[in-house]
Image (cartoon, rainbow, N blue to C red; front, top):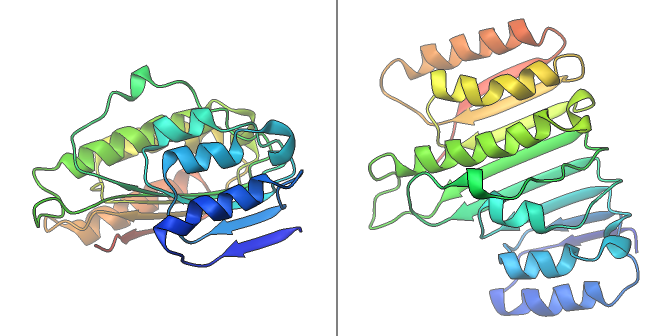
Length: 225
């Protein structure tokens, strides 16, 4: 069992599926989920280092913040492709400084991170809480990548969050851009659409990133709802 791709499934069946996966001695090299997992289910699946050690490609949609999930996972020494889709509730900026550090997989070459919030009270962005929350969490995650040995090997970085282009997002990206300047070949960002010269700001952001990453293909597009 080297390649397992799990389609959408009812929430009450994910626990049984994870239980079946945990019954084997070694998790597959390629493990792709479509259904979103709870934090407890995801940690249960990946908390055993020997069984998780052979995973090379992982797609994981979860209903928990990255700072609560990632530090709890077992080391994944062979993981080279990681796609993380976080679906969160409402709320302002979290206290990510109190979170334990994430042990970024050392072999990581491709990273995709999407952070989205469930609409609260019919308002998909409220007073900007989603942008603040997403930015704080994205910065926590990217700082961990920048400080890890994987930073010098990361070839592809894709980020999707409803954070507006500007100085705050530039500052969040700066450490990983500096650390990965020699390795990054593709950077794809999806940012919050804004009425105040949104296209111009995205173009200027893409130009600045392309100048800092001359070997990379850079795109900055507007995130969907």
